[in-house]
Image 1 (cartoon, rainbow, N blue to C red):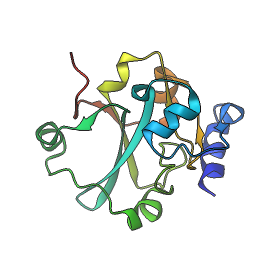
Image 2 (cartoon, helix red, strand yellow; image 1 turned 90 degrees about the vertical axis):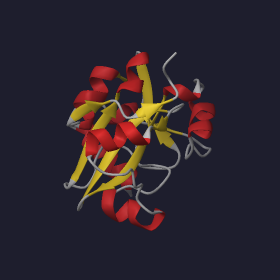
Image 3 (cartoon, rainbow, N blue to C red; image 1 turned 120 degrees about the horizontal axis):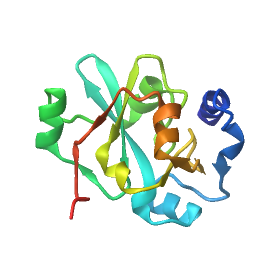
Length: 157
């Protein structure tokens, strides 16, 4: 199970015991916010994209959408999310539980600037009923991210 992959990854930071598992689904931003008890924006959703021959994950605030011109300027191609059936084999996690922890070796993780508004955020942990509360520095460390990017819209005032 991919929650076990995420938990094993988090264990190297001593954070595996902080994984929250819910009796209800947290597979969408809205469901995760309900399960956690926070505003949807604090859910750190993980979006999977094809870039050339590779796969990238962008972890972004729950209230944003990809800004296509910004995405293209940053990655040099149109934003193409992975089709449903490719998500698990390509990332190591199924739709609803995709997270930046315990991903396949060829996956590159980026963090979106939209997350900087919050002291803590709640990314999933590999299943459709899990999350973990992390500070932004913890998210940086635990995700093994490559870079911060600014590819989302809908959060600036």
